[in-house]
Amino acid sequence: MTQNYLERDNLYLFYNLLQILIYPILFPILVPVALTRKKYRSRIRQRLGIDLSKACAPDRSGKQSHFPVIWIHALSVGETTSALPLVKQLRKEFPNGLLIFTVTTRSGSQLAKNCISPYVDLLLASPLDLFFTVRHFINTLQPNLFILIETDFWPNWLHTLQHKQIPAVLVNGRISAGSVRQYHRFRWFFKPLFSCFSLLCMQTEQDAKNMEDLGVASETIRTLGNLKMDLALPEVQADNPSVQVLKREYGLPENRCIWICGSTHPGEEEHILSSYEQLHTKFPITLVIAPRDIGRADTVQDLCRQRGFRCTKRTELRRDETCDILLLDTIGELAGLYITADLVFIGGSLVPCGGHNPLEAAVHGKAILFGVHMEDFSEIAADLVAGNSALQMASPEELTVCVKHLLQDRQQRINMGEQAREWITAHHGTVQRIVAEIMAFLPLHK
Image (cartoon, rainbow, N blue to C red):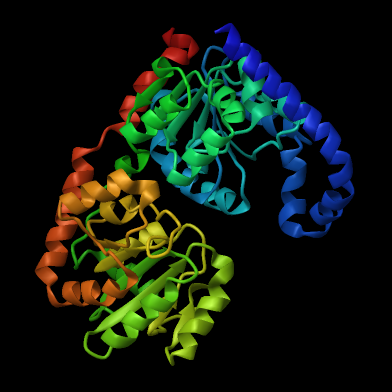
């Protein structure tokens, strides 16, 4: 135990000395960028904690001191989506508690305003990991518990929470294949960082093992599942009015199969468009492409137009317009749009990017396709394939064959979707397991 504290203190001192040495060099560069670019300027005051006390005052005034203050943090869009079931459950458990939600990225903050804000008392940009800023946030918010969703690990933040004896819990934790290598390479940095957590709730047994292999105490690690398993299961019948309304809103024809390719990366759109080029003359099919980085929307649109397709961005879609290809260049709409799909391709899997989470498509009961590169979600991908809920391609060249097969066999698409939903239902309960664990860290439940 003493050794762990020495490792953490050494990391903390080294990290802050490094900041003291580096920031005078970077400051003249960073300040003009922050002041001249709106996306940074609009959030930098919040991230430095300026006017934080004023922002918190109205929310604290109506709360009684014996109800817990719970601070939940998400990095970006994916983590915010994962947080939603937990935030809803915490609001149900503590209707009079103070729930504070912070987000690092602007896109994540936009999504949080839409889906998280109804359930929390305060929505803020997260603090920069500067010693004085972090202390100001923690002293002002005075949380009884800090919950981190999946990732966004910062030494000052975690060390200060521990120093003030505020429990920190990692929820929905996962370690990608690439991260495992980095964590072991810089073990001296990451082991004491993860040891600051009072509890680490990992998604899979492999994630838990990776933490143990790093040297984190096994008694602080739990395997509790993925929060996205607890996203609400919607009705997905073809005649569901909400499906028809969504199709009209997004310009998707009623009498055509909808193929959604979600979170695509450079190098994948070419294969997708090649498949679509071969299939669209033989099958009534409309393609939806959602690039992982919406900043690539113009590039993807150019690729579509070079092949002679009518490709329309979501942000430029006119009322009652239909198109060959819809380009989803917005934040937070993909998960909800999966309900309109007949089949779904999960991006980041034809190229070595580790893949993306297929659970949002599985929740909607859709036939799922992905490539060989699903390393970041290997257990989920293996379970879906083993349960005949998904098809995994060994190479990009198999994409056309797999899509053609599913377009020809409507019953197989339906069966795959039903099995995906059954698998999700069988794995429900992650949020209840997590809440049961964290109750022990809250004042009223000790």
